[in-house]
Amino acid sequence: MNINFPIYLDYMSSTPIDSKVTEAMLPYFQDQKIFGNPHSQHVYGKKSMEAITKAKLQIAACINSTPDEIIFTSGATEANNLAIKGSTQFYHRKGKHIITCATEHKAVLEPIQWLVDVHDFSVTVIKPGKDGLINIQDIKNAISTQTILISIMHVNNEIGVIQPIEEIGKLAEANGIIMHVDAAQSIGKLKIDVKKMQAGLMSFSAHKAYGPIGIGALYIRKSPRVRLVECMHGGGQQLGLRAGTLPTGLIVGMGKAFELAKQQLPQDNAKALEFNRLLLNTLSNIPGIIFHGSNKMRVPNNINISVEGIDGEALLCALRRLAISTASACVTTTQDGSYVLRAIDVPDNLAKSAIRISFGRFTTKDEIYKTIELLKKEIYRLRNISGWRADGI
Ligand SMILES: Cc1ncc(COP(=O)(O)O)c(C=O)c1O
Image (cartoon, rainbow, N blue to C red):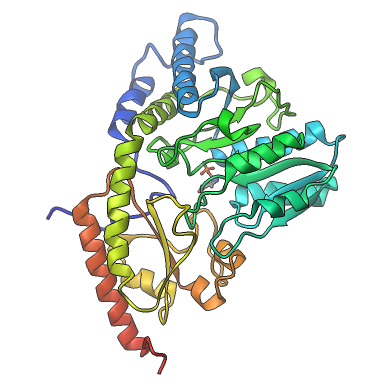
């Protein structure tokens, strides 16, 4: 068994770059003929712009949009900021109410809070059910004549649940409200069709889908047209919506990653499902393990559990041979544990002991077997020390 330690099981925080992506990007960092500023008119610039045009086509094919509906950003955080701040700045005369959900990524919750604090917006934060899923009726009830934006994520980065985006899209459309979807975790795990979902705006990130860190995109619907006020002012690139020189190499990488994500979706999912079952078969036989998030509406590459009788940090320390995380890697973990788990009513002691295991394209079966062995061993060892017993006696 040839295993590299620590075994990487944190794919929801970032995925390794696929070698085909690296291969596609490398010339743009090495070749003296294709380094040019893509916004320049000479041949060096034109070559760069040609590569960007191709990447846009690859991304558009993956999400069923047109290439001119894609604006590049530095990642999903920036795409979320541009979507939320840009659309509300444009439409604020229609109303100043936003609907979102308590389990959104901070890159959605924080810009909305800023609009509330600084620009007098009001927000309804929907509380999902204990399974992490939004009840569509709660959104219906929250809509008012003042609502201009509904921002709901597709796949949750901590508990892996899939929100009913198509239903929310229908509701938003029927009420003339823009729906923004944070789809940072969707590519390569679910088929994305922006039209079917009736999304006005959708955020993406390359490094969650085997592409490089530092590049993402915002889909902005052309028809019916969604308008934005720019957040990044400068040289007027990307139709003035996001100024700054485009990073050709990173964009080429994102294009290739999204092309592969579409092609490999069936294989990637079949593998994730197989590993998910292997892990569940073992973990569900250990008493006192609580699984977080719906067991039906979820992506297969994520398992989020609390282990009764053991603190999450203690478990992480004991599991140093596994690269897993407590809560989300993008948020500094607080003493209180994950806000996502607290929002779905996971008691404090369990929220503090939760760990997220996420795997993907390059995970091997041997790694999963080793993970199962280490998890079992350390859970029983730590419980022996803490004196925890399933019957509570
Ligand atoms: C759902 C979600 N949205 C946004 C982000 C931020 O993405 P980026 O790192 O590309 O800024 C993440 C990253 O963890 C995420 O999981």
